[in-house]
Length: 239
Ligand SMILES: [Zn+2]
Image (cartoon, rainbow, N blue to C red):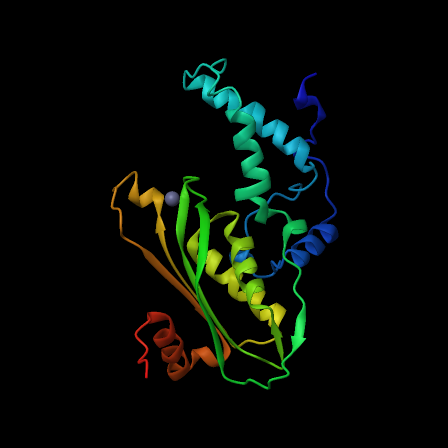
C-alpha cells in the first residue's frame, strides 16, 4: 500500500481558533511571532506512527540517492531508526502532548532571594543544518509566592531544546515558559552552546561557542544580573 495516499494534504483546512489554542497549549504566543517555532498549521494532523512511516520512506530515498545499499544488514533498519528518533526523541518537543506538566508549590520557606539552577544540559538541533547544538543553560528566578520542582526546570529546557532550533529562539522560549509557569517576570536565562554546524563543517572551528541571554523583571537591574552571572561563573568565593 502506498503510504503517500494515507497522509493528510498540506492544503487540508485547519480551524485558526484551534491553531491558536494549540499555540497556547505549547506555550507559544501567537502575537509574538518571532518567538514561535515556525510550524505548519497542519503540524499535528498526522499521528506519530504515520509520521514515522512517512519519514522512514523519505529517508530511505535520501540514502538510496546517496548510493547506499539498503539491503546491507547494517543499513537496512537505519531509515526506521532515524524516523523514530526524530519523532520520539530529538524533535519530540515539537508536539504539545510532550510538554512537561508543571505543578506549582506554595513557597512555604518564604525564600525570597534569587534561585539559580546552572549547568542544565542542552541537546538541541540547528534548524539550518539539522546537526546538534550542545551546551548548557543557566536559569534564575525570584519566587512570586510559588515554586516548582527543580527538575521541572531541566524538563522545560529539554522540551524546547528538542526541536529544530536557533539558539536565540530557544533562549526566549525557555524564558517565556518559565515566566508563564512561575507567574513572575523575574526570570533570567542564559544559554552557552557549541554548534556542530560551525565545529564540524563550514568554517570547522571546534571549541567556539555562542552565548545568548534573556533577562526580565528584576534581572533588567544590573546588580541582580551581576549576582546571577557571578553564581554561574563558578567564581564565587567559598568561605
Ligand atoms: Zn547550523
